[in-house]
Length: 185
Ligand SMILES: [Zn+2]
Image (cartoon, rainbow, N blue to C red):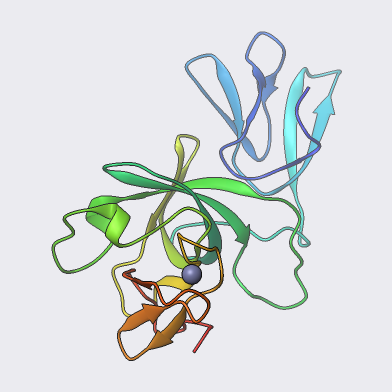
């Protein structure tokens, strides 16, 4: 059985186990959540329902998220979402993975993703796609990108001076796709 709190697009069960009820849908024999909320099984009807929860932050197209870079590949960055949209009294419930494809990084041409992001960086990004296949992010705006970067040599936070990032501990200079909301100045 899955977690009792789910996000849209999470796997719930196979169609053999139960059919999708409210807040759920099926595809290729599997049933997925269509809402953020709590899973409720109806054993009499053999359906699974997802009851939307106001305490869960929903991650949907257009949401602005904060995340941590988990992996930098040639064509995409893997991001762990740390926080959903900042709204009302909603609190962080759990973390989830997302992908930032190289074409969504910037309005300018990006040659190497490693010049824009490094593992451990904290980023601010926009959700451009959210489905059961996953969450796609974009940083192609001045306010999106890295908000806190760490020196690849000594792991100290990098300070922003104008357009460049510098480590005050070891003197190292590094490049990133820096957000206008960069935190360490
Ligand atoms: Zn350093």
